[in-house]
Amino acid sequence: MEFNDINRVVSDSFFYTQSLRRSLHEIPEVGLFLPKTQKFVCAELEKFGLEVESNDESSGLSLVINPEGHETLVFRCDMDALPVLEPEGLSYRSKHDGNMHACGHDLHTAILITTAKILSENKPNKKIVLAFQSGEEFDRGAIPLLKHKNLTEVTSAQSFALHTHANLPSGTLNWKNDSFMGFGDWFEIHVTGLGGHGASPHKANTPITPAANIALAINSITDLLANPWPTQVATVTEILSGNSVNVIPPDARLRGTIRGKDFKSIDYVRNKLAEITASTQERYQVKVDLTIKEGYPAVINSARSNEFAIDCLAKLPEKITINELPETSMVIEDYSYFLQKWPGAMFYLGCQLEGSEFFNHSEKVKFNEDAMKSGVKFFLALAYS
Ligand SMILES: [Zn+2]
Ligand SMILES: [Zn+2]
Image 1 (cartoon, rainbow, N blue to C red):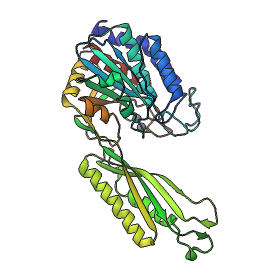
Image 2 (image 1 turned 90 degrees about the vertical axis):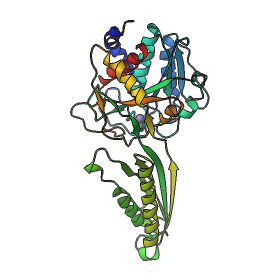
Image 3 (image 1 turned 180 degrees about the horizontal axis):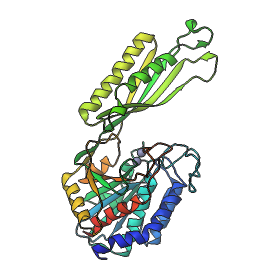
Image 4 (image 1 turned 135 degrees about the horizontal axis):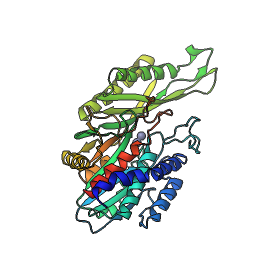
């Protein structure tokens, strides 16, 4: 296939890409094991005569196109969804109530399956390894996937991945050198007071007021409304306590996430959390236990890989808009484990739908499916360059 044919082939395949995305959108699964998704993706890949590798540790899949190729590129996507209830509306709404593809991984997967189809029909000169990952959101699914033989036997390569971004212009590709995404941890805070009768709070010690105080204090660490590109973030995403209108519960639990642009900023937030929990314990005379679980390493893009990708994209006859990001993103991604193995880069694929302002992970998020064309062109431009 000629390089100049990429635009036409991608446009001709778009109906297929869209139907893949919609089929995947209907069957969102969360975590490391995604049986229906894995079966669907595997069946599509096998239609193109591709041999697909899997293992027992996750639903990750991998395959190799043109093993004799003179240089190797690894393309990775993720396939897992989120525990979010999707509102009514779409004709292809989630059939798994309580799960939703709210992070756009259905688009990532549809893009990479289409890429596999085109590459299998028009063999590139390079060796291309395609990796379909599960368990990206919380489960470090990159680690079991990287144990596949298809991946362990790759010594020298560059790797590339895309992530949808619901607030960047549709069809654009967005890059940044070095720290593309920052560091992130998950935290859990347990407040233990003393339960009692709702009519006699003086005979109890409610955990709810200190828990609420902690949530407000954490919220004040960052002022998100003032800056769409903050350098540190602390967010409470869950509060649990009590189950009655007249019983003061003995304990409360808060969970959430902290993010930082670099070691310094994540350390700042870690210390702030420790200060807030210690001062609340003292002030309310409750027991406050803070546990911080280390999240994913930062996504560090290689400047050379960015340059290589941008050069490849520049050769496309129909140009894709490429923008440099102003700041490190506070999203975290375990694609960082791929980047620890080979140099490479992740790009944001702008998927903004006109009139929609919601971001990834919101139950109201909407992605512009047209953007998937830029996604497939991205991988093909690299493969055929
Ligand atoms: Zn996500
Ligand atoms: Zn994601």
